[in-house]
Figure (cartoon, rainbow, N blue to C red):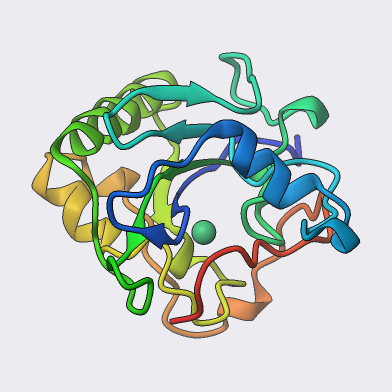
Length: 189
Ligand SMILES: [Zn+2]
């Protein structure tokens, strides 16, 4: 059994104010700059792909098309899931005052995310799609600031590809732990 199977697609937001552009370079700086320079000091960024405000899809960490998460493909999105997941982020997720989580996805971002999720499922028919806030180690985060299950149903994603959070014993989930970081760039819910 391979323990680096790609089992999950996790959706994130950058937890930045509505309408504020976010670039790939910014994300890389936030996550990989040393702590004394204001970064997280991680060895890798937290996301594989970024959906910009205008819907453009930008690659942060390249990956191939097989069903495994190779070492070089890992993104540090959620501690405990990274060895088995791909993480995608959209720019936004907070209101304009940067106070409250908000679903700020533009119609262009919505269109890109829909294509992205559906393509990923075509490529990996058994993959489960979830929001960061549904992950076992989400620690109360609001990320990605919308109900992922509801949105997936609204765009016609099959129930078999929608992650359902275990009602009990969620902390007993054992997954390959490839990294030790948590993604704490998001605002706390
Ligand atoms: Zn997140």
